[in-house]
Length: 107
Image 1 (cartoon, one colour):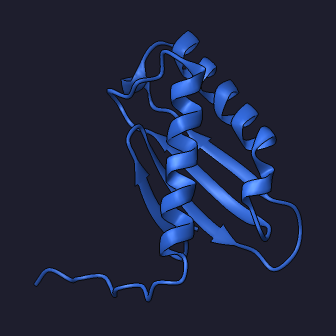
Image 2 (cartoon, rainbow, N blue to C red; image 1 turned 60 degrees about the horizontal axis):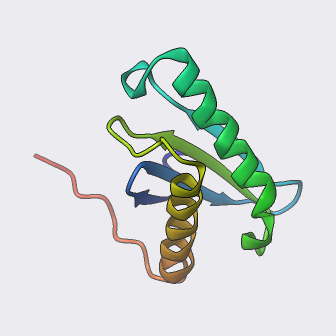
């Protein structure tokens, strides 16, 4: 998933998108301890699941998502999480048809 999917960085998140041929869309969430205590991490995960449910219309085809919350993010308001989610999808839709660049290998 992380190797085959398209990566989009949004202010507070890194989101990996992988379109799938069939089946429902799926969401995976990673929030490390660097983001905050358990209460904060669980709130972020609840908000992300809610945004995923409410904004399914953004998916034109079924997609697998992995969302990684970045430390230092603005996770104090649900509206900020929604805005970041929508910004990430705008980047994904804009770049979806772009030709991916091959990874650079360090020698």
